[in-house]
Image (tube, rainbow, N blue to C red):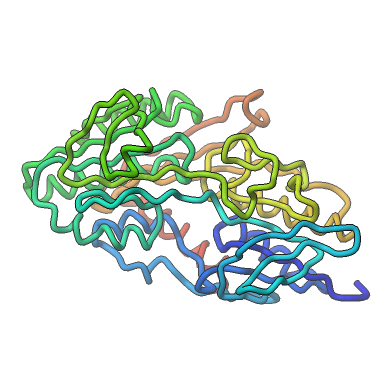
Length: 375
């Protein structure tokens, strides 16, 4: 390229890392990653941090990708491209202009009302805030509550409940672990085999599951676990997967509910802006592998816009989810799409039994994430 082109990547999750790594190898590009702390979080660490088995620092590392500049900041807004200039991102009060922007900020997570026994979190910092109450829990009812049907890492709340149930059992506590979900079946969109497996796993762990329990958001804002019919769940400790909603950075993009619509290149309806990751409407689970692929698609779309690539990237993800069963044992859910994209084709699902050996695969996933960060 005759002159340098600037591409801004917002976020440092799997999609952003995949996009930045791909673009960072292209000569003539000034690739800028904007992320608070200049770091990336391995969100699978949320569960062990919440139960006091790990520290936030075990699952948070600086982003240091070759060929990529990193800015320690939170993006404040996105300005669309116009006829005379490219898009821009508001960073620390100043606009940084670019030829293209890839927004991969993830879904936004709602805050819930303050209550001494109720914690809303779905990330490392929130898990750290809840850990003292989790580790000091000595009996009663412990509730994991899923507030909405759209959230990242779909099996994780079930894994959190099973991890907590195993902790209760190992400590000999007199306690009941409960899980609530607005779904009539767990993870029904992935297939009946996953639903049946999670039902059976929760039964084996002695977890009381309330299906079709739609949390009332107004009650939740007041620190109360109640469904839309008015039924209140008394609990000694509540861990809530909060409602996820459309990120404000993408508020002007066309969307289906909280998820942003993109074309085959990852382009949004905002001029010059691409989107990737959990915020994007795609027929795959909100897991790491689909996020990686959407990041690569967006990166390829940017290169196409710059005249450096001819065709959109055509690749199907292979989601690989780990279900924490406690005591260092994990089950593994592997999904492939040999016959095409849902809903026109059904995925092929394999589920491994829980065993300690699967922990090695979980550890390898963490190593892969660290290498994507440049560590």
